[in-house]
Length: 247
Image (tube, rainbow, N blue to C red; front, top):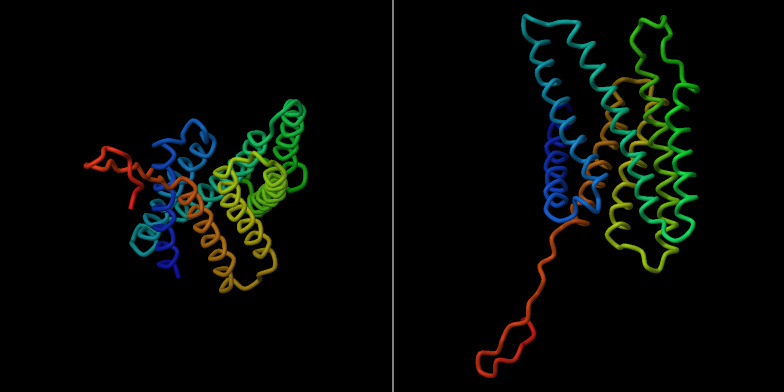
């Protein structure tokens, strides 16, 4: 199963690189927040996967270390929360971008308040240090925080869809980006929720696989959103010099 994970990771990397290239070519200013998220997602995935491969090599070799396991868990969970926070902020940024008119300032204040609540809520709802303040934050806090952020992002993305549907002058590219983001955050929220009810370690691959496949699907939708469209130029008639429709 680990090899299947790495195979999907390769597909993730290819999709992220494609989105990054498309954004850098012609959409970096319009979707700069998405560019930041994609760049961080790509760099962090490469880093965590590399650490994972090195860690696995250490386990089967003579230099197996408990510290490697501990640091890999810390790296994985810390990056997971950072990525989920970036997704939440990305939804908020897209909502603000989709808002226009005199109500934009008030909507901006409301969105700022939502961001502040999302940043504080995990520290209020979930215990962090069950063994004292010097202990490392337990994995359940990261899992619960990631679930909360993705669930909140999924709800806010539904609101964003409503705003885009109601707007007759909506940006079709922004709508496709929102669809891809909705697939990513909804898949993540569902997978984290399923992990709570799975007792057997042998069945953990089900939510993990669901998470990875929905993530890949969302990034593929972004590739479709930014796929370069070749303009079809009219062809000149050599006899008359008039423009002819393209074949």
